Image 1 (cartoon, rainbow, N blue to C red):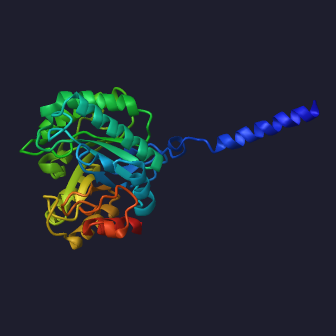
Image 2: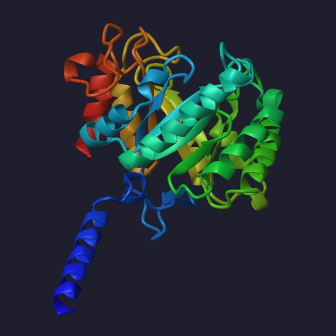
Image 3: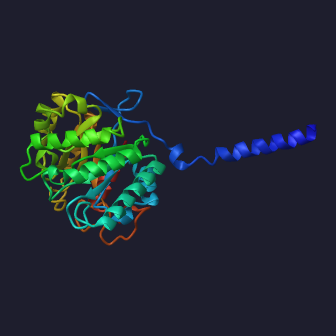
Length: 332
């Protein structure tokens, strides 16, 4: 009996040892849930957190960059700790303009993106990327349904952030955006009580000073931040002054999109102004996401247009903007 007991004990030890190495990657890399305190993004220990990441381009147009190799490579080699999944709503094959099959493809791409980001140990932003539909109320019904679905699916994912309206534009007022935001936040909170939610601001997410004068109602304010977008060759000190004014009034900011070229996403790079911007954001512990993970033939793309690699990029595969931004990220 003693020998038999030893045999079974040894087998049990072997099983325990093997299981220790069989923990799913997603579980092993579970990140602390984030929250908003004052103007700051913090973790559960109230320690300040700054996300520095990269946004995909439109998921309908460049879905090949949403893959495990790319996300793991960016985390390890570029020190990126977040990725933004940009899902256009009204453009070609947008979520609200394509058919049911297209919507399923986009949702599958998001699901994969969340999985890959989780496996890589990164936070992930699900971005309702309005553009030509400049007033978010235009597709509010679809947005509410979409975000309820996402919140129900990802309520237990501690690394998921919801961005509910990318860049309101076309003269859409803050009061209009605010009404939309409160409805979407309420819908998300039906299922996900704690996730961070990003709210777009007027004039292509620039007029954060307007939002600071009248933030969303107090009952919807928990873990809500407001987005500021800039393109360094166009947006200079005057926009940083708006950001500072918003911070001074206690508005929590999140730069969910930026680049170092002009506002078209193309044109020459302004590295000097970009350095001023990122120094300002680092000083104030404001998170930022660079545009874009694609090989589109424009200045803001990270990957050269002639490069077909969708992961494990060398320096020679990167554009000038891609090199400059990744070098900045790697310093920290």
